[in-house]
Image 1 (cartoon, helix red, strand yellow):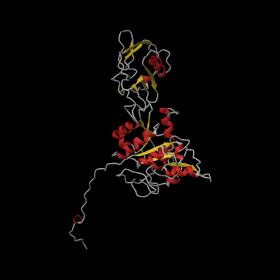
Image 2 (tube, one colour; image 1 turned 180 degrees about the vertical axis):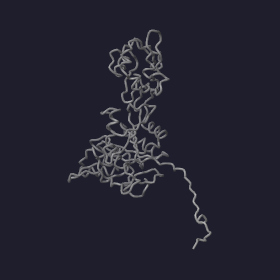
Image 3 (cartoon, one colour; image 1 turned 60 degrees about the vertical axis):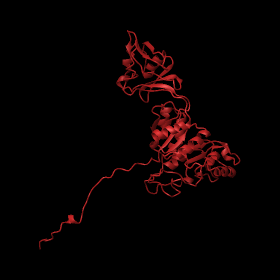
Image 4 (tube, one colour; image 1 turned 60 degrees about the horizontal axis):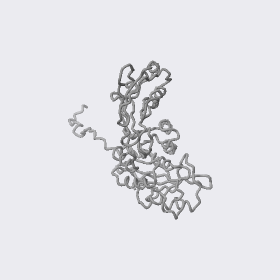
Length: 397
């Protein structure tokens, strides 16, 4: 029998497709910024991302404070995928001229060894331009050799070959706001081969830039700058080389910032272990009553809190069954302290944390608290989907 129905399904079903604008993304709670006074990060760039401890050691030096600070972070399991290093000008910085990156063709040493009458003009610290001539590169074996020839006659500054970024870097010997290195120009006078462009040090060299020196800044001033300019790039913060006064100035600033951050403070002060002591950072930070701060004591490591940061901040809140009981967590690479009961009681009373050994051979993080108090409770940005109420998770403070 033929179908005599006359009603169309379209009268029952109406479909409209629309794509909503993506919501504003909250800060990545797995991001950590460590402020260091390391000259390999200039005061113009200010911030760099690294994907391993080896990468930090390669740029900053294996024995640098930066390399030591990132080690506990990257030692955690699961391993964090990156860390941010920011330049804190704890001491006045040197004015610097960063040359353009040179291609492999521009680094062919035969091109340089053919030059026996090279020259350029360059001014340091706003002084008169220095005319460097009769530069003989015939014996240079590589770009380091080229830099050595120029450095032998350059006054008021040094020049080095940056093998990581494939560029020449000229650094003033002075520091502070008047310290600077001008772009190079052609040498004055005839009879010389202009190498200023070959060096990538001219104002027209693509990628060359200047970083004038700045006066020493406080930790608070540096944190203020990073909060204003890079706030959405980082959540956790630590400061290498900061004094207790720095910690006590930075913590309330972060607590009052519109941007949400968590501050990790490491200490080796023995006073944390003494109940009667009231001048150590654990006690004074507790008295400051600032929420988003954690203090960790460790007798062997100056950066133990960064292992705790790695333990807490690497939780994947987008997954299922991913949260770890951090109070009983491990800190790979951190030597556990063997503390008698009275000392551990002092640590706990001052709202500090410690990685401690037990008589059965185990070692755990204890008690997992903020400086303000609140067992196992931390802070996430208010807009984060991971802002859960469980005290096993990083929850709102």
